[in-house]
Length: 510
Image (cartoon, rainbow, N blue to C red):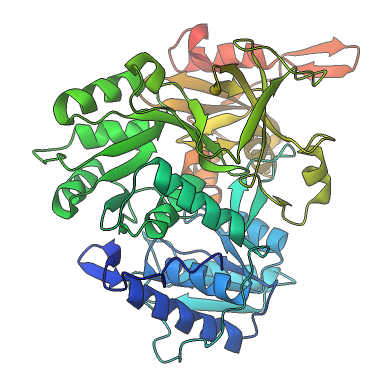
């Protein structure tokens, strides 16, 4: 079975540590079976979808393993999302059931879920949990059968879409279990090790490190809200051995107060804020930790490739690396012709293996376009190969990395264009040292134009905070060029304007 991870022994070892609360592997296994009984009672069957709009905690994990047991598909929803964005996920997934907390970080999830149910033609049940950090449904008897199969669609991860609407990359139970074990082996996770899971479980890197920990017999220390001091304190208190995240997260932990990080043994990071060299040097000098770069995405799992921890510092920090399993293959091809490219020449990175998604959920057109005729997944990333490894360079198309999340500018543009004060919108990215990409929007006003403050407030209420533009500037017209294929917006000119609006030079734009 793909998910015998919790019931393969070591039942008394800690599986989850959430603040003062602990849950052993045996307790999590039983709690998950109780959740499966609950889901079955409300009508969830094989192939049904369950949307989980919850912070990290015991209930999130309960529902994941419960869906694995029933052969149902779990749809994680970002807790940063607001009603409109969550509704899109629910409708895209045809979710029959939505699980939410009563409240979290001063947002009324229960009220938002009721609004979503009223607006959705497919959602049948809204389940509200008062405590997401302790197991729920304790009154139910454990579900007696394991009905999940390796081929079941089990979990999705959000990814940016070319039309501006995020898609759901879906993975099977067997692929998730195989990758979890491979990540654990590659990173030397051992029974009774401890992994700091400071990234949200709805994201692919947070999810992969958590299930890899459980597959290895290690414990997950959950942090529903990341803060540098809290993370450093957790490393010291729980004797954390593994910690994966972004360069900015590592920088905050290394900047924290007087905490001992001496147990930290392995770490890898995605570099979004340009702090890779700095954190690598500091982690090595202070604690002897050899941090490495990594590569992954929603469609092919996080930690698809990782740099060699024993390599030279100049190589260790580069994004990319060696695929973590011989079952994962890559090639670099010419983006136009598709012909293979020799080592050290840049082209599109393409992947093949168990780690590649089954497809985009309920989107056959996008799925077909994501694969070559000979079955390779088109990552859309520019990279080059070197001696059996690859190095990521950047995205081929014009997406943005906002606080570590890949966002299509069209998603923000479409949202702004719905405001009555906006006739049209364009969004570009500007790179800020130490922070990474930020979005800057340009709008053409309607007959009743809105102020920048009004539009920023509109974004704050309607979209996730990481998507909110840093500036929203009104222009009479967008710079454009009449080419052979029609009018083209000159994004490079907008980037220059965006950089100037933030007091930067042209070279700072992305």
